[in-house]
Amino acid sequence: MRLAKNWVKLFAALIAVCLLLPPAEAALSAPAGNAPFRPQFTTLRIGLFFGPTAIPSANLQNAEGFGRGFDFGFFDSSREFVPIGAWTNEHRITMTIDRNMVWNPAGNEGRGEFREGTTGSVVLGAFHVMLNPGFATFDEASFVAAQYHEGFVRYMPGRQGGPFFVLVGNYISREAAEAARASLGVPNSEVCSGTQNTITVVRTGTNTILFEFDAGTTPLGVRPRPIGFENPETWFRGFRYHGSFSYARRDGGFLTVINMVDIEDYVKGILPYEMSNTWPLQALKAQALTARTFAIRSLGRHASDGFDLCVEEHCQVYRGRGLANERTDQAVIETRGMFVTFGGQPAETVYASSNGGASENVENVWIEARPYLRGVIDPFEADVVRRISGYHWTVRHSPAQLTERLRTRIQGFNLSTISAVRVTERSPTGNAIGVTVTDVNGRTHTLRGRLQILAGFGTPTMRFDTGVTVWSPGNIFANHPAQATPQGTQIFGIDGYGNTTAAPPANIRAITGYGHMSTVAGEASAGIGGCTGLVNGMFTFNGTGNGHQVGMSQWGAFSMAYYHNMSFRDIIHFYFTGVEITETYGGHIFG
Image (cartoon, rainbow, N blue to C red; front, side, top):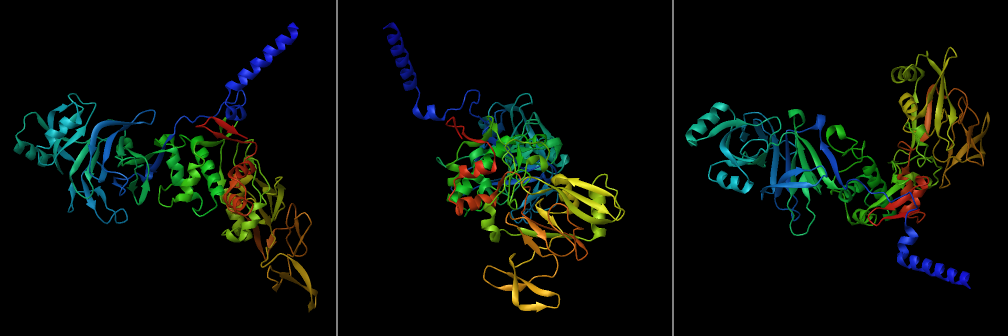
């Protein structure tokens, strides 16, 4: 009887515990020791111009209906904007370095820009008259500056009596500024120019200075002022961007321009440039998920330049709102906060246009292995081959050209004239990961991995055969009884429309039931081994695909969504082995 009562109490306790758990949490919570991933930052620093591309001036303009003026400040270590109380209602402003500058209305593709100089219709001088002492707030200093013709405020937190100071005028020489100071007759004034860190803000196209910022190595932050609850958009260099902007003069040089943007807005600015905005929603959602995860995984990739990611293909192509539409925005919104993770950390979700029929293990392409970046046979690209520009490609080199190419691109290569090229090792997915060349003296050298193979042979991918002539139209060969040659029956190709074309007399390929190809006649053959790799005296490489072949194929994602009605989850799990999809804002992990 006591035993029965104890079981009743235990059962009741278990029911009580279960009732305390929300059903969704109980079903979707992460396993012990695998807490949901939380990104350190959700504001990204995207380098627009930097290093060799740094610019002497940068125009900003509020997009109509999406902003009204700008606030000035800086960004703290948490990437939060810290306003300093300085602002302008001007909707077109230009940041410049504080040197003698001339406005060129034809520069910057007709949008206008400042360049260093002293001759022109609009000249911005680097010398000013500064009144002492300073003021504690921008409003106080701004009130006094308004009493003077061409008065403005400079922020200098490191100077005693500040941090806001009133400056007057802009002159191209110290002598001219001294003359102006004398005419003003203001006691405790001095002539000054900017430091190597000073950034000047002017009304675009004029020499009317609105504000100057000199906080040492702290970059200037510029935040668009919203209209109502709209998410502001700002024009910069022909593109519309969400978020704010940061400007720095690294080592006293031109302006490094950084877009400080929320990760969701960043993905909205990537999606239509990495994938067509007309593509199926599920493919776009897979692209949004990979782009978001790649960005978080790559935080600080450009740390030495002061930001996370650039805007080029090296990182991810980012151009703001230009090509975004309802479909691309929907893909981002419906995957908001989702990341691809492995072991609780963001995966390296790389992607490329197409893989040619199979992706590849990452260690055969770059260096370090990843358990989730494993090569897979990809049957989906076959549905869209006709849509993919340059999917089938051919690369040819004469023996002399190939020999010279290998000598200049492959370290330690010292063979004489090449006489044969053979694929000697293929990965489980059929990509060439070892290619051996032989010279006229019988010496050999083997190129291994993508970097060596692509550098040595100039092929777009590792998915190729050597020596085999890919014949078009059609790869179906048949006897044609009405045609005969002195050498025997003519071989014809039959395309999908029933048209027949005579096949070339050499390098005819047979296709096995497993899809493997081998040459029936001629001086070359496909696959491992083979003969010389020569076709009509040229080393010939015929292959498929465009890209590094690791991770997701964008065209494969299109096919999976469009032709096979598969979801973004199906796409992610096909191309990334053993990953999870983590919804960070909701704390869920999906298998």
